Length: 385
Ligand SMILES: C[S@@+](CC[C@H](N)C(=O)[O-])C[C@H]1O[C@@H](n2cnc3c(N)ncnc32)[C@H](O)[C@@H]1O
Image 1 (cartoon, rainbow, N blue to C red):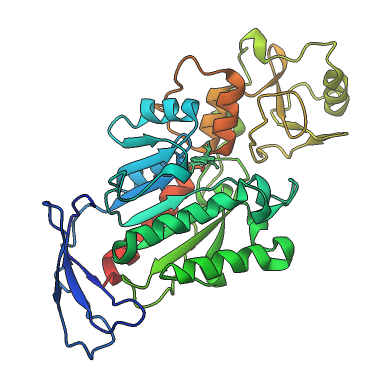
Image 2 (spheres, rainbow, N blue to C red):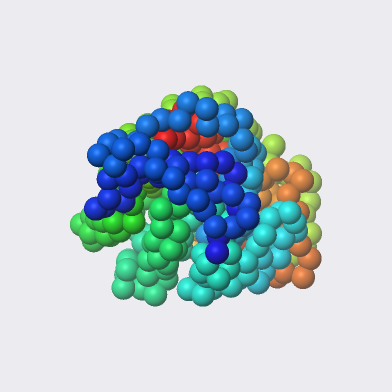
């Protein structure tokens, strides 16, 4: 049985049915369904008095450390529940979102009914991207991690007519073109069959760089699907991202101080020479050097490359800086800050440093989530039927 909902909504009849009905999602459990218009009427009527100021709600799949949740909360959404299976990520999540119901289990064991998932306006899911990333093996849906996408669809179908009005999926931009576009066609077909308006124009690439002062370049794909039960169309354009001036790197990285010993690269480390050679004789440069497999990429001053899950280790893609104490990787706090998490965001104890970097590198950047949530809220309040 589903948990209570906040307000009545109109449900557009599903395939094969023409009637439109008001579903009163009451607090006692069973929903009462009463016809709103004649069974012949095909188009749902807009409700003019749909509690305009009610708090919109969200649910989170693959919640990680809560990047999506953080951004949605800042935009005024209330997160009713979240699902994540990794114990350390759950620790992170609980530390920062003690008020949210976190269901710690494998999504394959998650059930709308058995886990009593409350109905939500928006469901967001940043599903694992390793199998869809350009840099990976590109196994797509043949990879068990890629198949987790179908768990989202399973849950949406379990919600049935009371499915979330909006679904936001996040992944690597390459998912759109991988395997000649076949991955994306699969996603498109599955979402449509689950009762959502979704086409290629509903996939939006958004870069953290464009929406906030954060100096990190981080381009991700957000696929936004609109329930046919809640909207007359899937037509939606994201607003122009606000033009922001960029923060100096030194707002996020403590170049003028020293960090703990563990962050510094020993002089006898094989990467030390490589990195020192590129830097040459510009000791005051406050820039980031990124290790690639066989060379060092010197980033433009003021630019941080995409932070990745392996940034806490010593190899490919790891960003380094020179500070007063020498050559070091970024601290966990600096990475959180570059991802756009607030300074109040806390790192729980007892999690290894390696795992902390992985969680941060895998997270959705909260300012991007906030940007999306704000745009979604506008459309939900204005156009939801
Ligand atoms: C890209 S990260 C999610 C980022 C997150 N959405 C955010 O907003 O910051 C993917 C997450 O999926 C989780 N995950 C992977 N397989 C899972 C499974 N079978 N069930 C539940 N969670 C899973 C991982 O532990 C990881 O935290």
